[in-house]
Image 1 (cartoon, rainbow, N blue to C red):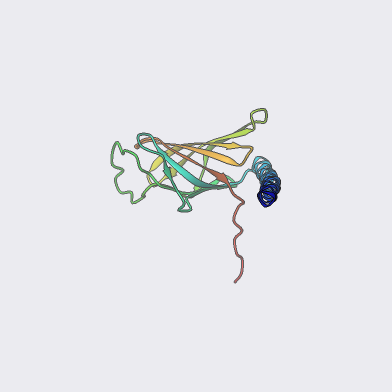
Image 2: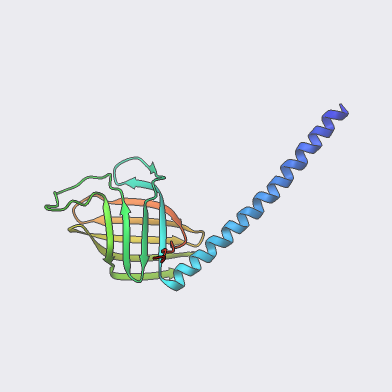
Length: 172
């Protein structure tokens, strides 16, 4: 009986100490996300890693394929998959999905709402031969939502997280 109480006490001590370690890791993660959110709001450049894909008519798809959307100095780079309906064929376009390669964001508008802890970015960009209206909602906890409305295809929604901008290797 004494051995059982000793083991139970030891197990309770391990559980309680691991909870405090977990809360410390969570606090560090929240602080890093808040710092990244502040950088996005002040510097005007962002990198979103997509983790979930939601077509207009369909089920939620979890992604681990490294789909990203980047904006730096008003230039958009992205490759996002498309699983929806196409209303008309875009002639002469070989673009699969929603792709932006060094595309200038037209009518880029940023609206911050510090009370709700979010920043909303809206712009229009050219994907192949089709314009896409994009709305980004960046939350202060590091989460991000992407709403894409192509002109000839159905709406797509993506969810993900802010990530630090990749640093280009400048070695010769």
